[in-house]
Image (cartoon, rainbow, N blue to C red; front, side, top):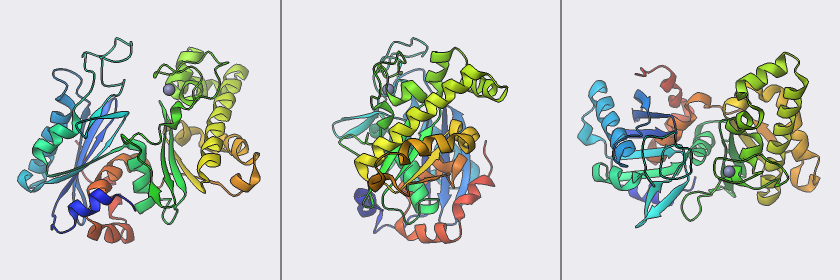
Length: 343
Ligand SMILES: [Zn+2]
């Protein structure tokens, strides 16, 4: 696993507790853990009012509250990992969020109660914590699946989510790709067809997200992804064609990524795949494996082992001392997150 800055900054100190923060466009979750597994998890709607510090301040407040409830001294929590929706930009070397689902000052949706251009995430977290490790949510999910889940032992692989949006986390030669600002894997915004009228929230016309994501299927077809898929079940021919078309575009995106990076395996998560992957898989697989066999033969499509908790475990993994990892893997300690209290 290659997170050099994480390894060097954590090694040498004996840590008792770590914190994980999962920042989504709708929901924020925090979880604290010790060497024996997760201890307590809290969730709230993501803060979107007040100053642009609000989401980062919210994460700190929630972690303080989680520590109090778990009987952990907050002052002993010095290291946190963050799995966050992107994109990121850097200001003075520190990560800020510039995501359209949180920052009302970008895009033109007009449905957010703020005019933020960015959220100063890393700078605010560093006011409280000594070690802060932030990754894009798909990168964190990929790290977790490689450490504890379906991608153990795989050095050429990706985590893909097909849900409200489409995102990737990429690993080649055992190296997790991050890019200049931590945005490697935003392949959901690769352009596929400008013939299409489908527009993505990012502004692109005909990118993967525009053609296949749940949010954009709703915009294209005038009914939510759930309604669309229910109509397929009821035998609606138009809905069926729309969903098949989306799956083909999704599969072509996976083909493009396979051809570019020579990957061996994809773990596919996200609500659309979770609910419909069983019958969509042959369509997606055909789009990959019917092309260029030297590159695509044997490419595997796998289900996420960590599933609903992949973001929380991914965030914890980013903060985890190397000495804990083997134990968490052998004893599947991450699974305890399913048993602990979530408030
Ligand atoms: Zn886009």
